[in-house]
Image 1 (cartoon, rainbow, N blue to C red):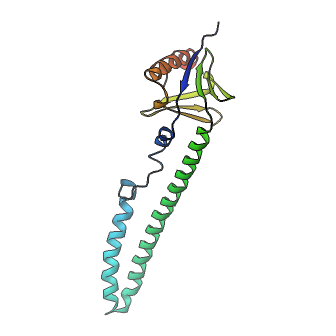
Image 2 (cartoon, rainbow, N blue to C red):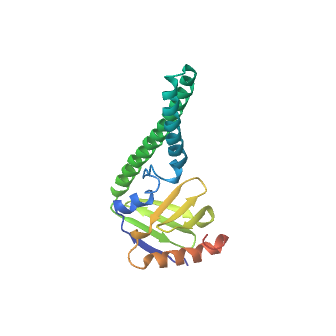
Image 3 (cartoon, rainbow, N blue to C red):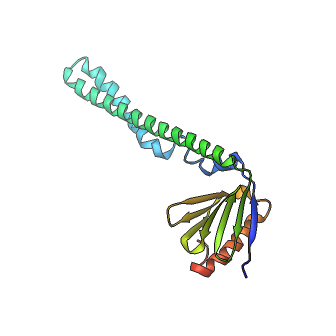
Length: 180
């Protein structure tokens, strides 16, 4: 006898965008850019000093140009990262709009698989071929073929998320251990 639990999901654009907010937010004064900003500051200082010194002695022109080239490279690298993040942000927003075109989102858990249904499409994820991760704001399912399903916790109504994770853990443990 196959038992099945069904969960109706409420999908909102804000919840979908929140899944990728760390990857789509550009923070210039973060740890990732601290080294580049420090180099730019030091290179500006030393470049200014060597540029001023080059007015008195022409052998300092090379060093001034070297510092300026380093600054240009760092600024270019930061700008390239900014453009990459903006492109990813546009992609994520387009993806969220595409997901919102579907009216019905539902998860069903039976004894052998997790079934995700959106409108008339459905996707079967057999428990032996998936790996699951319960994060702070989402539930992630990685399939062995490289596919990924991210479910925002806010998509579940009330305490349904707890019963979803409990139900999926019980069934997943029948195949390869507890939820990781």
